[in-house]
Length: 424
Image 1: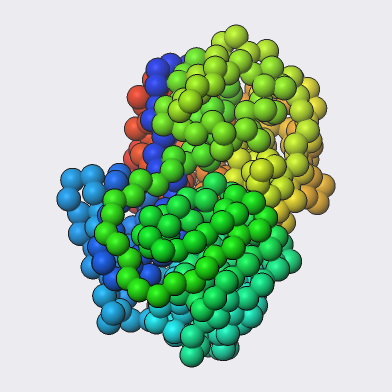
Image 2: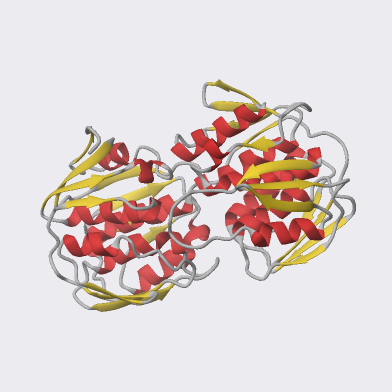
């Protein structure tokens, strides 16, 4: 089992290139189940989650091949419509095969999903929307079993702007008869990217409102066209490296990012005193010139402050010699990094869904344990600024969403090493 050893404090410099977005690639790859003809992707990220969904699709009968930086997919008419527990349990996003399977093949049997244990993420919103579109669904023995004589367009109002439910319903609507309207839809850039991919794949498909709280899809018949698609850059990885530059008070340049996708992060950073030079597809962090002050943040659905950056931001706040408050409004169990940061010398107290940080306490290296994807990133950031050696264990969590994070930090000058250790 791999661990990361970090000897700090580290000073970073240079440039880092952001990979394609995990959270955009996963629903898009589920969407290839709609595509009988070949679709290709340029430079998919090398992540555990991408490998997991590729294994799932391959097991279902999707033909996958690689050619240099391109990955090709074809979903023939005889793919199996069952997604087994052994693969779905590894990643929550596997539930996203449900919508495209029902839309194209009119049946699906999908295991209830797994993933990070950061709180309740019920799929009942997905299922209720699909039922409104004409699916008959039952849940038994750990599986969602669904069938339909043909999905039909419907007006679906989500009780919460769930990203996954929005994605599942958008894909379900592709071959549904008539018009589907999703109200209170999620607005994330990953939703827009999925809609852009589907529009590129099906020339007659009409999707409007992606990126707003109302998405309208007019269903079609027929096959997809072959094309090559490039997934958007990973906004969460970009935000993580911005924070890395600031927590180490370093000057670095973050390349291949879309600054408009992370304004909810860069704006509070600038209000705290961060010096950022923002270009069209890069952000330069001037950490040496940044005089940071404390702030209070609260997570909320896009375009508000992202829950996926909360842990990393909290690590940054430990380095500021003032009191800050972080409120987590999305997931009830997303402060599992706090005890580990406290073991490194941080002073953080939890009160329900609120973390109160008394910053400025020097961190010292310690053995720490990854508990979920973003908590893992927070511990790496803390290790970069802590004195001495930090041993970050169970980094398979971080490998789910960060491509070669150790090599990218090495390229910036960090003293970080990946070591394969015997299982304890």
